[in-house]
Amino acid sequence: KRIVVLISGSGSNLQALIDKCPQNAKIVGVIANKPDAYGLTRADNAGIETRVLENSRYDTRDAYDHALATAIDALAPDLVVLAGFMRILTPAFVEHYQGRMLNIHPSLLPKYTGLHTHQRAIDAGDTEHGTSVHFVTEELDGGPVILQARVPIFSEDDANTVAARVQQQEHQIYPLVVRWFVEERLRMEAGQAWLDGAPL
Ligand code: GRF
Figure (cartoon, rainbow, N blue to C red):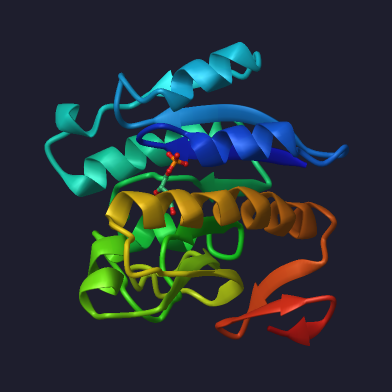
């Protein structure tokens, strides 16, 4: 199976996917919307083809997403993995990859969609937080959840310590979900995620 990973930044999740890539899968390309995304260096080091498509060079969201889809489809992926890709995607783009695009969001969805999730969890006095892998649908961070990991929040925590704890879990669960997809055990149907034929 061919995998394309989209990033905007550090790419620690990309690194976990590189390190734990299933036997019958290959990350055939990494695309970033920021030229300075450190994940591009990680991809280079792993001998993976990279491409930068800067959103600032496009006038409209539609124009950017169209160019992005063209770049992705040139790599003919079976699966598109969003790994810290900090862009809201157009409905047409999302529709095109329906059922074959995953995202990881640093909260226990449906709690805290959007940005600054760690600080928001702390501010709310939550004692538990986490991360969710989900299929991407039109609704921002709203697609069917596949797998979550939970972490505690301690009184001495700040957003950075919580983020580090969450990311450690992300690096475990994202490669696992990708493996399920590659093994054809995971699919999205009727607005729901299914694993081994059972709804999640
Ligand atoms: C992750 O915490 C992910 O949940 C969020 O963005 C962060 C990306 O980190 N969507 P990295 O670039 O994979 O290190």
